[in-house]
Amino acid sequence: MIILHHLNNSRSQRVLWLLEELGLDYDIKFYERDAATSRAPAELKTIHPLGKAPVLTEGDKTIAETGAIIEYLLRIHGGGRLVPQPGTAAFDDYQHFMHFAEGSAMLPLLLALYTGFLGEAATPIQPMIIGEIKAIFDYAEYHLIKHEYFAGDELSGADIMMIFPLEAAHARGRLKGYDACQDYIAKIHKRPAYLRALVKGGDYAYGPKA
Ligand SMILES: N[C@@H](CCC(=O)N[C@@H](CS)C(=O)NCC(=O)O)C(=O)O
Image 1 (cartoon, rainbow, N blue to C red):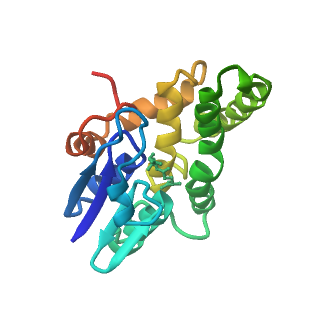
Image 2: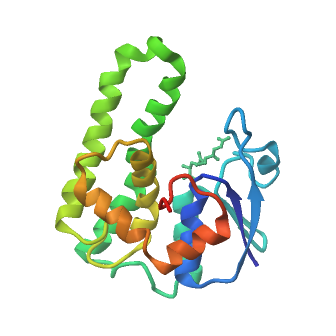
């Protein structure tokens, strides 16, 4: 049985979305962030030493890192769905955005979050972080003006990865003026599988507002 170890308001929401897109059977084990620190409970470290979400278990396999989980689910259970044909431009974009989401897009957002705890001490580094955030979403906007999805004209695993940095930026008001990014988020938020995942996962601060 597939078990998703799911932390509220976290990247594991996008794995739930994928599980729903694929129509797989799965269980959810819920974990709650600490109300004061927002950190995951220590219990998650008993599932995987990093103690982060998402983690997916199936039989004797334990997989951490969203990208690895998504690639695992598509490879083992996808039956060719949500992966463009290798050798196409869409496949190159698929691999690019699959890695870009965590490897590039999340970094300046996390820097903004962490340096936010420093107050004025962070002032000298803020312009650089803001510039990096702008570069990331200028790039996403440029892509989405020309393409329906991140890997060609159909939904793929790359979209499952990219929705989280977009949602996180949007929730903090960082997508003002990025119309293609906002339209893309609104389009994803209407997908039946996305909405089913929201019901399964419980409160999600970055989801569609009622
Ligand atoms: N690159 C990892 C990041 C995992 C990660 O940082 N998860 C966050 C939730 S969005 C987490 O578990 N935070 C709680 C904590 O670090 O205590 C992935 O994509 O899975």
